[in-house]
Image (cartoon, rainbow, N blue to C red; front, side, top):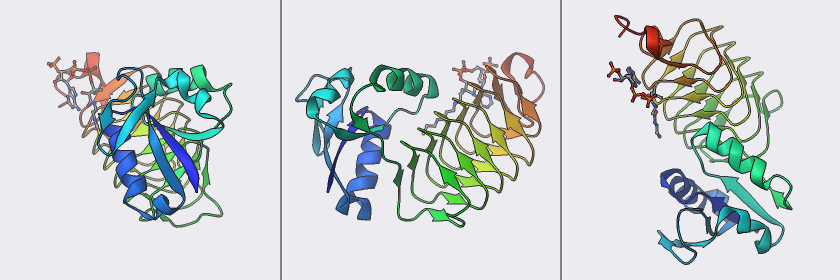
Length: 216
Ligand SMILES: CC(C)(COP(=O)(O)OP(=O)(O)OC[C@H]1O[C@@H](n2cnc3c(N)ncnc32)[C@H](O)[C@@H]1OP(=O)(O)O)[C@@H](O)C(=O)NCCC(=O)NCCS
């Protein structure tokens, strides 16, 4: 049994706790509590308590942690703060995930794949990536580290996402489309082409926010 601390006691942290404790992952990981900068140690969050602030996790010993932060920018900053500490970053995969080609799909450390996710083949997923509920990932997709795909996102074949990308709930990315590093795609958008880095795009077809008039 591996002790696991969840970094972030917000909605995603509570969802990850439920995913681990409510599935066969619970036979592998024992949740010992949360670390959170905004809640005092001892605060009760569901069945668990806040143990310490995030920088305090090192004092818990060489422990496994999961970054329960949906915002890629925040996730990146928090990892930079703790990366030198003696921590392990397991990838948590809900038992209902359909990984159709585990031998040819690469998944980095510290990722979370929630219930109902499906991966086809020849997929590369970086470190600390969140694939939230029912996300589907088509062949030859590349997903940069720290990216977060919200529930119900669909990536067609050959989609490329840079580092630290956020894809909002229910967005669809058509084949060969791409999203540059640190960009955000709005909930429900359809990405048909290339979205540059550091851009927020919404609508059908997805266009950068300052050009969206008439597109949605
Ligand atoms: C796209 C997004 C990142 C923009 O956030 P933001 O920069 O704070 O933008 P704002 O909320 O200020 O909205 C700016 C404009 O875009 C519009 N807009 C925002 N999100 C939109 C979307 N998904 N589709 C279409 N238009 C959208 C707003 O109506 C607003 O238009 P206006 O200027 O004509 O009033 C955000 O709205 C979004 O979709 N986030 C995804 C949320 C999500 O999936 N959460 C899952 C949690 S599990």
